[in-house]
Image (cartoon, rainbow, N blue to C red; front, side, top):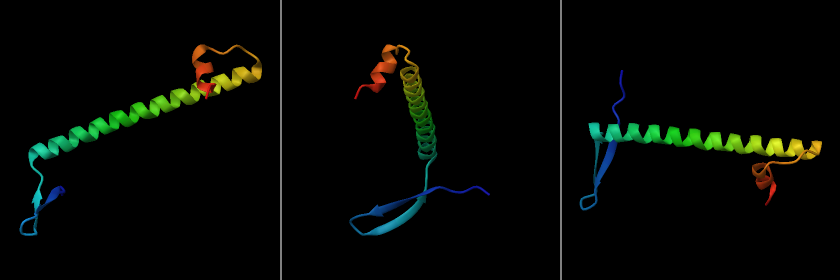
Amino acid sequence: MTEILTKLVVDCSTGEATTVPLTTEELAQRETDRLAYEAQEAARKAAEADLKALKDSARAKLVAGEPLTEAEAATLVI
């Protein structure tokens, strides 16, 4: 059983609301948007993880008394 995706079209001059199925172009755009969002979210999560790893490394080096890299030092500066 496949779900038919629909949209609501409202004629503002008459107030009439009609539910119509999405066109193939709209379905394709919806899939494109979904894939773009997933890629953007994956990149955001990867950047977040990288920053956390950099901060953790900087913190460990500070505790151990080791010199920081330029990137590590930049993460600690507010």
